[in-house]
Amino acid sequence: EVQLVESGGTVVQPGGSLRLSCAASGFTFSIFHMNWVRQAPGKGLEWVAYITDGGGTTFYADSVQGRFTISRDNAKKSLFLQMNSLRADDTAVYYCVRGEWFSGDYAFDSWGQGTLVTVSS
Amino acid sequence: EIVMTQSPGTLSVSPGERATLSCRASQSVSTNLAWYQHKFGQAPRLLIYGAATRATGIPDRFSGSGSGTEFTLTISSLQSEDVAVYYCQQYANWPPLTFGGGTKVEIK
Image (cartoon, rainbow over all chains, first blue to last red):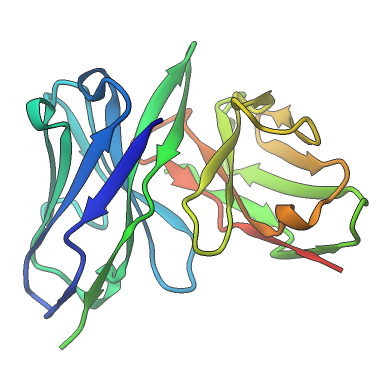
């Protein structure tokens, strides 16, 4: 069974930093592209970041570009999100999400339960 | 950036009745569209990809249609367990990958 378990969410002050982790199990982590998706309180889903299977290519939403860094450790089956210069509007539940290619179609086929990040003084 | 717009914001449907959700893209995404179901307190779940292909384990009361800029998710006979927020998402032109604002489905 595919499992994605996020950790690291907490309350942090504006301007602060935080590192989220995602532990993957039940599948061959090293061959899948991965993502972070977030949901602010009362809002919809927002894609945040993407990383290829080997970690050589990353993409970011404009809202986090230059402040967040996605990375992975395939040996430890782990995905990370380093979050710097945090702002109040970064407050959200952050989901670790597996991306799957279905013969040319790309979709988020497995999601973790999420970890809550609250940016507040 | 491709903007996805969903309607209505909230849909109230009687048990056993049909629910029809709409999603519109600001430019053509061909059939590069997915639908997700998000129940309160749970992780989102992939329902449909390629605009019309059901993901593994998804009941056949869920169906997707459309191409270009207009898409529909249909729940043919609404069950109580279908209460959730439903999101469409395009992957035709990214980054960024973009979601619609969601449609909340509730029981009438």
